[in-house]
Image (cartoon, rainbow, N blue to C red; front, side, top):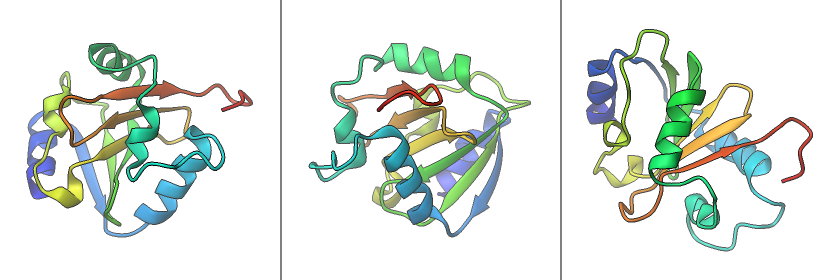
Length: 138
């Protein structure tokens, strides 16, 4: 996590670490962005393989959508980071890449859960961007 915090603060992203709540945020994300009962693969991001917005399109969508306050959580850690992009420089996918397995798959979501940006540990996949309109079916 220290590596990720250094990379983001270098880009002037405010980072507040919360060492709990990851499980609850993952569950809320799953209920918002995945179809009910859809998780049939080991990793959450693998459910997004058919997403229309991936790769550089996802990077661009993230940089257009990001709000000053977002939550970052991981596939297998209870840690959460609250991200403040209000003073940040342009953030790239590579700024989120870490090699520690606990923090390798990361999920960023706005505070209202209207969009998510997912960077998987498998570099040949993703990233993915999904936007949900309130009331829209999954």
